Length: 158
Image 1 (tube, rainbow, N blue to C red):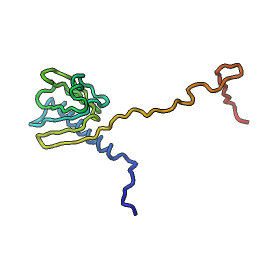
Image 2: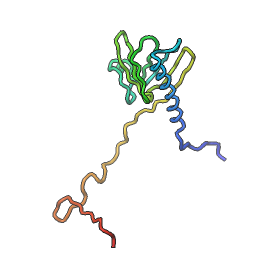
Image 3: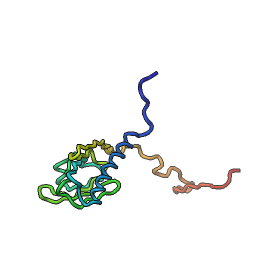
Image 4: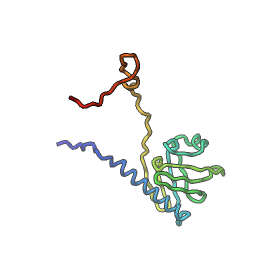
């Protein structure tokens, strides 16, 4: 009997990651609804700046080409949370900026006030693999008169 476990046909890792990201969404949603952070809570949110759906100013992407951490504590506004992302305005070197961050882009969420932390895996978006030309791109059948018309008979078989 082999001690190796078979590969799972159920994507447990993805399901758990999605559920944990829902925790971040719920927490941010509560902050949005209440209009601010309760008590001493504050958040460090790390995300992939080049992930699909991330919308941040160009100068921030240039400064943080891979990953960036933002702090939601005292100076943030316009927090809007949707099912799959959040938007927030912050200042960077006293310049206001609005950020839109999908939950799928987040790699870490930390609330140091209560020693709570989550780590996430972000799937790298891979370009589609090159493929051969489709065989049906051009008409392959020519009629007797040389046109590219194909006749199909939908009559009953006899």
